Length: 296
Image (cartoon, rainbow, N blue to C red; front, side, top):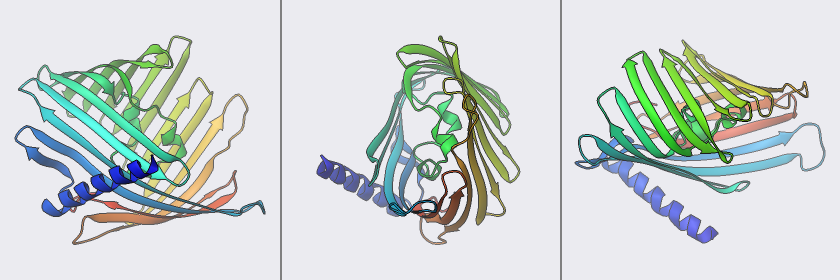
């Protein structure tokens, strides 16, 4: 089984590198045919060295992961389209995970869409897209957000600054309504389950700050991450949670990233360090991924 995964990874890796070479590193909106295009293509490699500071048992832990993925869209005609997403990640600690999505899109007009299938939920969009570098290094708070689920979705664009989504998804053996509203640089989303449980998430970008906060009523957990970009090279961040019923936190990370981006090649990444005040470990991290030459 592992050998099959290695073959699949190798084939997709070769395909993505070929795309990067043949399109001069254009890793978004790559035309495959007159009606089919790759919206996103991604390959990333992550390496972590974790030093535990409060124990003598296995004080050093290591982890490495590779993630590859594509988002592909095909227009059937003026009104209907398919969109599929596939991401695979293999690591020495979590083995292989897959992150699929498949959507049938009906474009009623320029502002209104109906989607059905195994969908990226409105709530999921407050989390990094799986076919991006941010998803491979997401924080604890980001990882608490639900993934793709079967369902049906309505999307409407009122203006460039106002976008709303309403949907119904099958999760935890029941159908749950989801909703999302984007206003300028703010995104508010969440869902409700009929056992009085709910989840709400708020994502925002204000100048050099980017933040994500969410509350999970099921677990009575509040979690949040805040990123501060001093400049395009240096970023500081913090990641924290609070379990309300227990009145305690088990995550409080302080981190730093030093980014790099090649001038002539479709490669970017960062060196990073972070310390968890509660779990008491120091993490050194190296991360590299394919990147569009024009933008990050």
